[in-house]
Amino acid sequence: VPEVADPIVRTVDIEAAPEAVFAYFVDATRLDRWLTVGATLDPRAGGVCVQHHAAADPERGPFAMQGTFLEVDPPRRVVFTWGFTDPEVGVPPGSTVVEVTLTPTGAGTRVTLLHRDLPAAAADEHAAGWTEMLGRLVRAVEERA
Amino acid sequence: VQAVLDAVAEPRRREILRLVRADELPAGAIAAHFADVSRPTVSQHLRVLVDAGLLVERRAGTRRLYRTRPEGFASVRAFLDEFWGERLAVLKAEVESEEGTRRARGG
Image 1 (cartoon, rainbow over the protein chains, first blue to last red):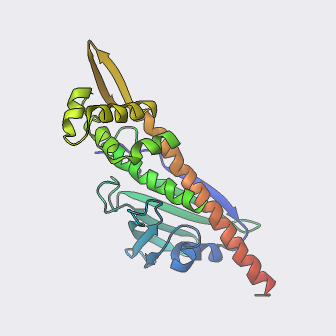
Image 2 (spheres, helix red, strand yellow; image 1 turned 180 degrees about the vertical axis):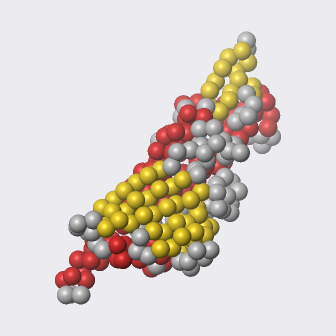
Image 3 (cartoon, rainbow over the protein chains, first blue to last red; image 1 turned 180 degrees about the horizontal axis):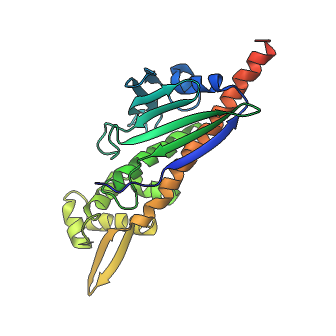
């Protein structure tokens, strides 16, 4: 069993109602504005959550995150699996989970994103593939910077 | 972080990381694995990986032995953390921009 790393946790406060924020996780048009270059979303438990992420390398093209929605509880919580069919990435579909929790605040919404069950890059057999995926992610981010 | 990403951008360097993740191997054995790559080129790849902190080099007599340095990948994990942070910042800008437009319209 590969060693599992501590989850990544990020929060951001947004001046908008939870309902407005929630749409940005489950509506493909809105997801494209901040995370993807195309997505196929069926936002209900067991529904598909395919996210295409940009890659700077033209030979690679976008790479597909093949996820499944585990929980969809508007406007409070959305949980989906995060993984890749490309075995070189080393993060198989279903192997990691992204949990998004929306909490109303006085001014709007606090978004808490938790990415758990990540392979411990430090120790597990997928270190090289994990690094490959992160390399693609950073190139995707930089391409749009 | 950039040194790590540059180091793993080359497919043969990723192959080297796979070769030595479980077993420490001498340079000669690593070079022998790549029939189509010259020995100096393999040495160059090993140098890049060592400089990026992804490989540990150890001398035993006249041989140089290499193995993966797991701690070298920690900075990349930090980058995924940054990735989500940056994406959420874009999310904030997008949602607030749409909300501003909606409010301006009186919606």
